[in-house]
Image (tube, rainbow, N blue to C red; front, side, top):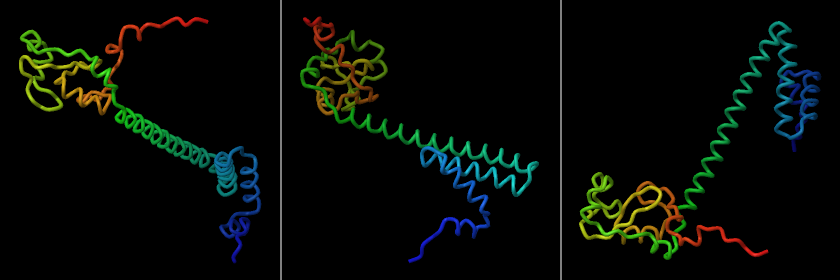
Length: 193
């Protein structure tokens, strides 16, 4: 079995005992492992650049290295944050898609009968068909309008849809339950102490 000695390996790469001591010191004073490694790299790089290039070239080189290292660390943190946010958003969308509305709430959505006055509304002039079944609206049919998006669907189509999901079939906004719940649920009821 071969055992590796860190000092021997670093000496093989041309590092002196002083370099190894600086690296070990920097890693020892850090708090978390990640922070101590970063601090160790920065102190080691500073000492190495001063020793190999001299003060006049070593300090500008170290400044360049520090800027590059900071930009790289910032980029890595942004990528990590974006990945975490995307995973959270995907989970939230997936949770919303798995929820359905209770039959009592679906039945409380007001049903409108299509007449000449509703056919002349701005919505019907743009969309004269149900966005679920893709069939045209005909006078006398029952439709339901969702809140807050205002999209209109055949009553039977949207009832079936909301039995499986709690969002609009067209824009996928979560359906607000506030206008469909009974008045008493909107009021804050004072509880006896």
